[in-house]
Length: 309
Image: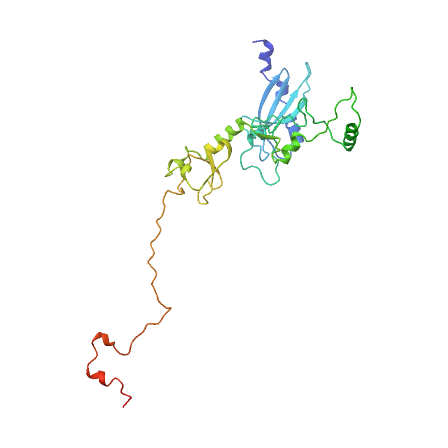
């Protein structure tokens, strides 16, 4: 270890005694009453000393006012170098800065927020290629204007020359055709993007969740499952059970919950037959028993017509 290094660890006597100069400099920069007690004096070099004072500013717990003083060689006057507020060993610090793309979490976006994507986002790939670039030997030109049409008609009526190139017309670019078919998306999900989304959905509503472990049956046999289209149909669907914790969410076919359509099917209660009431006709009640019944006495047969002589 060199002698210069040894001397630098010992504060200069005149600079170390300049506590009042350092305090006045700190009080001049800080607000009134926020400069506390003198904490320590540290040698930063030959005839260079930094005085630390306690900071009483609310919200700056553990911070210290650092005032650096120095003097020239063979000089007896100490001069002020700089004054700054620095964090101490136990200071309350803000968390380490993280880019927005890494600290953004699902659900952070609100109405009106815009989430940009990088041009080379690995989750996306071009939805179509060769936009506005005619393929080789194509009859499609680079532009269509009314003058082009007039020139084409005149060229068809005139006799072709040996050096004339055939006129061409742009019938439609790839982008315009894709837009007409309703498929114009500049970028679509790449295979990497599909895998990332599938892993995220499986982690939230997959077979390893506590809800799925206690479910009576998986979603693949549930009537409330709406399968997805495309390649994800083989592994995922959308839950349509309003009482399920995954209602409206993309769930794995291996996920399950207590709202399974076939978990507890209640039998249909039996209903008694309705009573039969014949109210469309009248019931006949004879005043006299019929003769065929044998209940009519013989003597009553002679007095049947009591109203005639």
